[in-house]
Image (cartoon, rainbow, N blue to C red):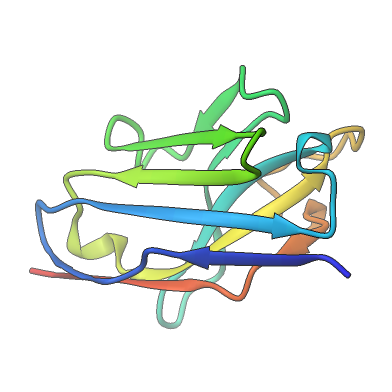
Length: 126
């Protein structure tokens, strides 16, 4: 049974930083492209960032580009999201996502994701 678990969410002031982490048990971590989505109150789940199975390719939503950095450690089976210069509009539940690397669909589409975590809450106060 696959278990994806996020951690690191917190309440932070605007301009501050947070680091989210994700672990995935029950799957071969290196066989999966990994990433983050978020969902704010009354909004749809939206793509934030992703990283290829080997770590060589990264992608970001325009809204976080230059502020967030995604990384992974396949040896430890962990995914991280360093979030700097946080804004009020970054407030959301953040979800870790895994997609098998052999799938051709677009990671940015939630329907393409194979496994989701339960989410970790990030709240940015203005």
